[in-house]
Length: 206
Ligand code: ADP
Ligand code: 5GP
Image (cartoon, rainbow, N blue to C red; front, side, top):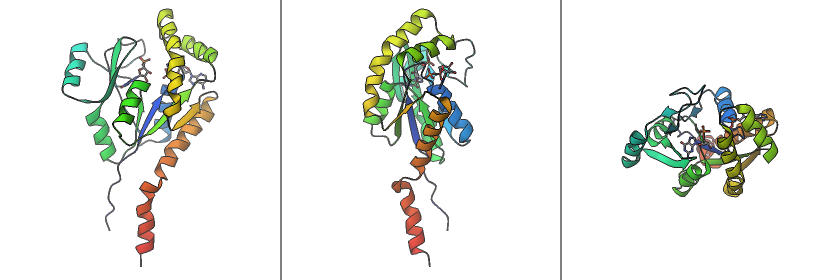
């Protein structure tokens, strides 16, 4: 009997900038080799260490606008004066192939996906404290002071959005946070909607 291919699962991860969500999402792709980390399009400048096609698809504002006009984004948002968006076609293709997708996106984008009632697990990552968030942002050395202050200023408002997410993970000890995110992904595959066919198969087998 040929089994019907199951759609992959969509995991949406948000957190205030500097909390460690990129670190966590990247770690998941090592733990689950089939998991696809979605590479967003952005109009922001490349930072030292950023690689086009690996970290983002760096896109001109004109090109980004054309993509919006062609409805090519599953969600997009303006963050710190730049635009960021997720390609609908890529995500849909990977999910249709039965592979899971993880999105590292801000709360505005997560909300758009939630409002479109697209099935997904919504995960919010919290820093252990605002002081620690400030430390991580300055240790990362990727933003200027003004940009860091901008990010810290927005962190509280972003955290107030945590209440509507399905899962909350505090990224204090990295290893523990990784285990918790891993558990959410594994649990997604045990949900009744996915597994009930398996029960049917056992019960109807001769
Ligand atoms: P985000 O994607 O949320 O902006 P990053 O993944 O870039 O955050 O992490 C911000 C900084 O914090 C990086 O320098 C990263 O190495 C560090 N970091 C991530 N998780 C932890 C942790 N649990 N403890 C200490 N430092 C961490
Ligand atoms: P950074 O410029 O520091 O890489 O990212 C800034 C913020 O943009 C982060 O909160 C990140 O999660 C968010 N982001 C990255 N890609 C996307 C995207 O495709 N859509 C949305 N809505 N946010 C994104």
